[in-house]
Length: 166
Image 1: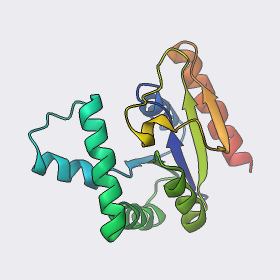
Image 2 (image 1 turned 90 degrees about the vertical axis):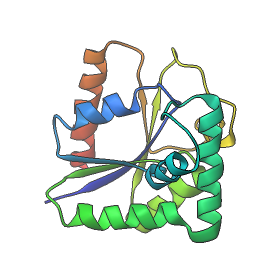
Image 3 (image 1 turned 120 degrees about the vertical axis):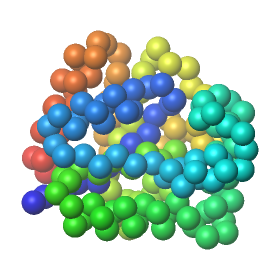
């Protein structure tokens, strides 16, 4: 079975999870984030309800940066999940990553392709570098989410078709 790994990025609220959900209608999908373990740590460290407001987005960015510096925890987590993916019946793995150097790492380690989801109705978050620089990377694919949910579902189906043609 042919498997694909996609690093997905886009501003908060751009439609990344909705796009992944639509892709899962056409292929068996594993969907993870490079901050899954960072989010767990944040939940232990601070009284946080999981709301992604500016203050907590910055907390997650800062914690991720520290975890990369001290033990490269996000990469270790992703690599362990990629190994599980390799041995599963999942066909497509999405990894949510914001930082360019971390996306490059996954391209090199896993042969991942990169995907940007854009939505002109959503303002770019600029309160931290990770969110503020999502458009400053040369992605392999870009999906413009500027229509209805049905339009986005059709784009997901075309994206899946294109991925499996290569």
